[in-house]
Image 1: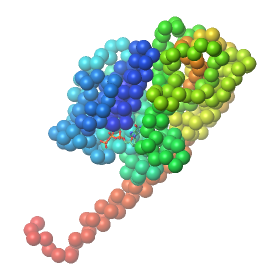
Image 2: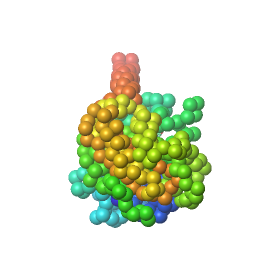
Image 3: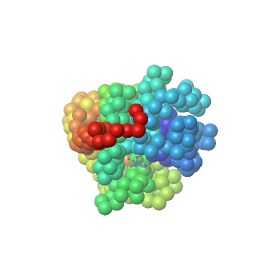
Image 4: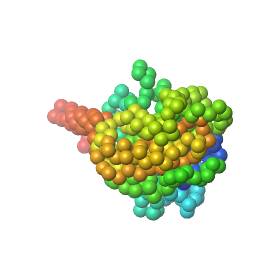
Amino acid sequence: MRVFFIGYGQAGGKIVDMFLAMDKKIQGNSFRGIAVNTARTDLMGLKHIEMKDRLLIGQTVVKGHGVGTDNVTGAKIAADEIDTIINAIDMRGTHDIDAFIVVAGLGGGTGSGGTPVLCRHLKRIYREPVYVLGMIPAPEEGKLYSYNAARSLATLVKEADNTFIFDNSAWKSEGESVKAGYDTLNDELVRRFGVLFRAGEVGKLGVGEMVVDSSEFINTLRGGGISTVGYAVSEVSTKSKPKKSLFSGFGKKKEEAESSLTGEDKSAKIIGVIRRAMLGRLTLPCDYTTAERALVLVAGPPNELDRKGVEKSKSWVEENIAGVEVRGGDYPVESSYIAGVVILASIGNAPRITELLEIAKETKKDVLVSQERRSTMFEDAVDPLFE
Ligand SMILES: Nc1nc2c(ncn2[C@@H]2O[C@H](COP(=O)(O)OP(=O)(O)OP(=O)(O)O)[C@@H](O)[C@H]2O)c(=O)[nH]1
């Protein structure tokens, strides 16, 4: 797919920067992206998004310092400066893209508030679908973050064509703060979504036997709502391993093969990877049986790909989800791993989202009570100097 990324806010910008780094590393040409933020320093910290594609908004309101976790202000700035944002997108070129993907941390202010506004306008102006990749906060980050994320998400399900969720709390290590884990979290996120968003592109090794083109991706996400993604890898038994690998880590940590399936036939290996992708940790842990649609994708060296394996994997996924629409295919990449990715689209039950909405409801009540208390505190006590 040809994807146009918009990294909104600090987290969004950082992650889009990583997607572009990934594309550069494998000499791909699938991704382009810009960053939008109200904080100047966040934009300065990016490495791979060109300077001209970093857009600072809201300067007259927050003077380049960010909106300080106030997503109402984030939304207002986006609405006021929507023409400037659309102009920056147009300048980068949109004629050959398959989809927009807006990436943002939903618990903050700039990305949380701005993303739904941007989605509304992108949908109004362009024919291409508009998806969101949103990170939801861990409860330990505080009630305000959960409140913001819940409000943003409740708006996004109406404004975006579909929203992929990445749950920070499900992915951070035990005993580690969310902040300390950002590098690992982002590596995980970019690796799995990177494989997914590159599906259908013609690489150096040609196209797959069962190509997943952008229309299959779009039809899988047609139901709207929220979606989650599973991922697993299996090492291939080649002696020479390529230097550049789509599934290898960024920087420090290299992905280790989760298990070695040497000796099994190609088809069984593919089914095994897809099973592990779906039953393992999802970007948003949820009840996968409630998914309306699914997309199964297998990427790996051409001699490891197998049509029968993909077909059987699709049937297995179909037996295990609520809906009957399961699409899928493969694509060849230079790698010492086979990667399996499963999109579980339009899911009906995710305990973490229910929890987020509960925290948000509580927080709303607390805010109303404290506002009431503040407004009545001076009532009838003494007379003000003047009215
Ligand atoms: N996965 C991940 N989450 C992040 C990262 N940085 C921030 N977050 C999460 O995103 C939320 C905050 O969003 P930010 O992007 O920092 O905020 P912002 O949109 O720039 O808004 P303001 O800073 O309030 O102007 C919190 O829930 C963070 O945990 C990151 O690098 N990776």
